[in-house]
Image (cartoon, rainbow, N blue to C red; front, side, top):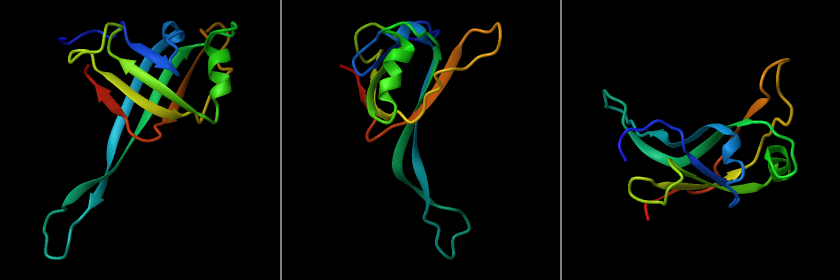
Length: 136
């Protein structure tokens, strides 16, 4: 896959891709803690990587129908959800890796909006354990 425009991200939450058509933004951010190892006599700071962590941010268009956004996400509050993200909806490959994370569903905004605006909301969930990357 070459440089591309994000128009076909594939996102599943607990095995369901039903919410993908309601998503308008996806961001999986990972990082490693920065641990300073500088000792006396050094003129420059030295570092090693510590524990890794991640966060998942999703932006949704809200829908309250039976099997859509609110009905699917509300029961997940306070529990873990497995999320799989691919750059496109095609099969997993070297050019279309799948990132899998168990996320702790710590926040939801079931009602949000201004008069006359599209009802949208975003969530940011911390990962719970390893974020994996598969290419096959």
